[in-house]
Length: 414
Image (cartoon, rainbow, N blue to C red):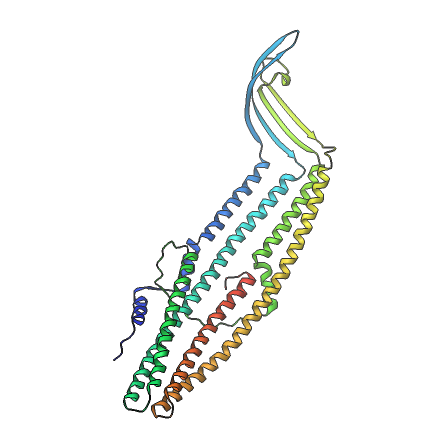
């Protein structure tokens, strides 16, 4: 009497001892602990702080200044100390401050968008690993079922051999099949280990426990949108396209800001206290000094001209980049959409093959019991049945992967 192999017992023990968690549970965990999500959140906080910094240009500068001064000439010597409070405010700076604020506002908006899209991308990665683990888990069950059936058929072959109906070759056929299935189970265990380690990394876990059972089903849900709708949706969802549009806006702001070099700069300044000697009207008397200063650069060695030309080219380059990314997006959406349709059609065909394989297996097994078919026929029918089941499982997994690929090309979660 043959015993159930150790690997079957080991797989059963894992299933009983480990936790079974759904995709929604893993997604919630990743949103909290994933390192890339944390980085994106900190980037948003930094961009928000920098946006606040650009507002400082609109506030006055207030402070206290003091020191000592000494003057010497052939007629007289003079020295004194000075200390005064001052307030300074820039009235006009050629629009540079305004453009700096708009630029950083765009950066802050994109950082917020980047955080949202990082979460979406991490959700896709979690789902991809989840479906891969679910496939490995279900494939492992199929191999165990195939091994149990093979053992039952082996016992039947041994009885037929003992009765003189069959030869040793019939028994060897099932023994060879058993060895192959054991090898397949070992390979699946290794694949599960590798996939689980990557899964834990995405979730943000530092632990090395890989005894986690996922709970779900590889169901196929068709996409009910037209290609044109998906491309239109990608216009507002694709991170690289939104980034290209953001860069074009910033390049436009930078180009506009170069005009500020040709406009005057106006500053207001007020000082009160014991001013430096050159600024005093009456000696030893606290003085209030008010200054309105306007400066206009007349020539700077064509620095302003070449800066504007450079920014104009940067703006044109940003526009070309945006068009390139948009074109690339359309191609990727079309390819992903086509791939999903193809895999869906092949999965439909495989479901029909699965029904045929089941009927063929049932007929062959019945005829084997009546002595019409031999062990090779039964082993072949069994192998075809479980190979078809595995292919059907693979197509359902690949359909999920293709959906994730389409979602990636659009910029959505799934």
